[in-house]
Image (tube, rainbow, N blue to C red):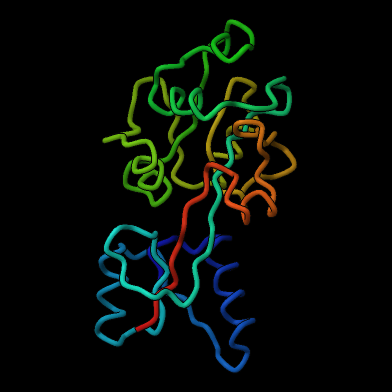
Length: 200
């Protein structure tokens, strides 16, 4: 059972578990709340639960997956890297114009998820925000949709899970660190969330 939607991350997580345990067949039930996923695990209705690592998670996890988020912009945008401090100001709504990031004098369009989505909740927790619902933002319920909006809007910027960075968007470095497997595994990439796969 999973507190995540049935998306690319969840499929990769299930594939990794299946590779470690080839004798098992994995059936996924996704889109539950974290509490519902843990409840099913406790009742023995599920063998595994995939949930965001939070204080109070039971331990040990069967394994922990790393889910990096990557800032993306339109390929026409000259920006190559953004500092953690400036990215925080984009998320909190303090930066509203591309000129504050060294670009043209044009409104910055932050594409974002609803507060109730898993990705929205992860970003709210990371940036200690009560809401992402600020004026002037463009909302899209899925990471794939957010990436598609950025691909078509030269003034767009967003944070998407790494598995949704496609060839039609430009990934930005954070503090001059790219979201490569080496940097993520070494713990140097600053926008990585820990996801626990818990056993009943």
